[in-house]
Amino acid sequence: MTAHGAGGAPTGRMVTPGVFVRSSLFALGLVCSTLVFTPIALASTLLPYRFRWRAVTRWSRFNVYWLSVTCGVRCEVEGLENVPAEPAVVLARHESAWETLALQRYFAPQVWVLKRELLRIPFFGWGLATMRPIAIDRGAGLDAFEQMLSQGAERLASGCWVVVFPEGTRTPAGVRRPFKKGGARLAVHTGRPAVPVAHNAGDCWPKNSFFKFPGTIRVVIGTPIEAAGRSAAEVNRIAEQWIDDTLRRIRSAG
Image (cartoon, rainbow, N blue to C red; front, side, top):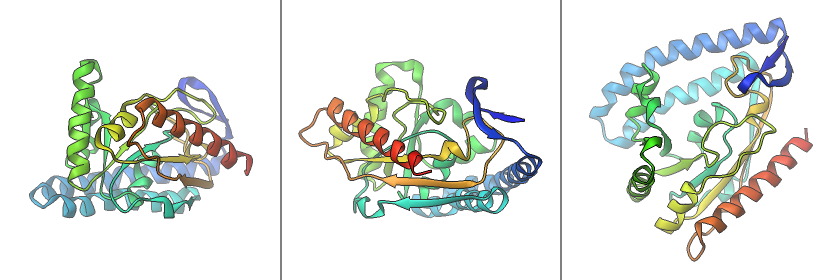
């Protein structure tokens, strides 16, 4: 049996009995940990944000660890020296659910720009809401964009990284979507640099797939792109080109 990703497109990875069993074990741990951590997350709303962040992100760290134990998914990171001393805007490739968990380790504390509907998901969404995300109503048009700029500026000023997935949605490995300009505009608006991040998480954890495949996810953190004096279009173009080129390098290296 071949695993299928978004829209039924095959990922090219065969689902063996071992992959099925290991993916099932990971899913069991994910569900159980969510049930355990949700009350902790809700109770932590009484704590200052940074204490709340440390408590809630134990869930993410556990599940990245559990993924490596059950499914043999490892991680290598290149470019940690490029992480600025002060919070900035992160423009990251979005192939999987993996990066929403793992990037919390390298840019902390962080908030995401995400769809408001995610906060309505039982347990997961309730916990997510405690982390001060920038939850956007995509149907609100210009109002949503202004909300992202104002809340993003506030989060950066309070010491949080803002993680933006400029494709706007998870994109299957090997598929390219043009970048939206929201994250770049936030960087220009605040004068903070934009940090591009490329990775191949979709090779091991395909979009919308129950199955997880053993392998090494390679994450590359690029040199910060100075937004001051640049247009959002230019920042976006530089980030998009760098991520595309880096992804080709990652995948050609096998």
